[in-house]
Length: 274
Image 1 (cartoon, rainbow, N blue to C red):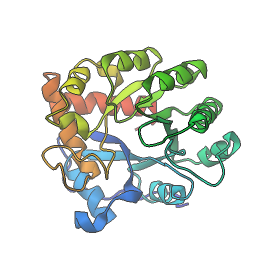
Image 2: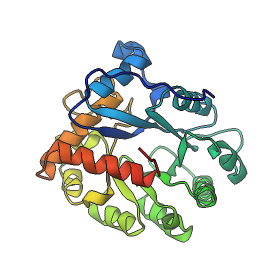
Image 3: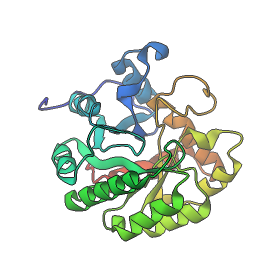
Image 4: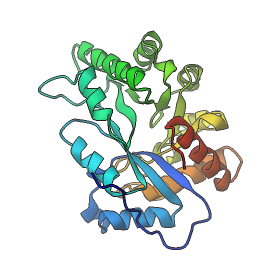
C-alpha cells in the first residue's frame, strides 16, 4: 500500500462539493468513456464530485478495489460479497473482519438480498447477509445494503440482527415510502442513483422528495444506471451531479444545498474526517 494516496487534480475549484457514495471504479469501461481512470477522476472533480466510495462485490475483484483506494486520495473502499455473487466457498465473518482491517475501508458491503436475479432456495443469501451484519457489528463499520424484490426479508433480517446498531445506507433505493420509512427508523440513510432521474420513476421521485435532509445520499452505481441526460451511455462518478440536480428540483431547493447536506451525511455515516 502507498503511504500517501495521490489526489488527481481537477483544475479550478468547483462551486460545490459532491460525493459519489457508491460506484464501481474497477468495472468502468474506460475505452467506452474515452478516458483513463485519472481522466475519469479529473472529470468528476470538474463536475464537483471530489470523492467517491468504490464498493466491493466479491473476493476476486476486491484487490483491485483496495488498490484504487490506496492509490487515489479521493477514493474510499468497502468490502463485501454481493447477494448475487456465487463463489466456491462462502465468505466467513472472520474473513470479512480481516478484509475490513484496512485503513481505506469505510464500510461492509455491498450486502443484502436479491430475489430478482437469484432463484430457488435462497437461504444461503440470508445467511450471507447475517454474516455481513455480524462483521459490521464487530468492526463498527456501517453497512451498504442492496435489496431487490426482497424488502420485507431485508428489513426483517436487519432488525433481527441488530443492524441498526451500526447503521448504514440503503443504496440505489427504488422502494416505496413504507420501505424507506422502516429503514429510516432503523437509523439508515437512503441513497438515490440515476434511476431517480428517469421519466418513468414518478413513484420513486415522490419518495425522494420526502427523505429527511439528514439521511439523504447520492450515488451513480457507475458503470450502471446512467442518469438523464446521458441514459444509454456509459456511467461515471461525475454524473452524480445530475442525480443531485434532479433531487434539488424534486425537493425545491438548490444543487448547492443538496451537495452540502449529502457530503456532510457521507462524512458522518462513514466516519470520515474531511
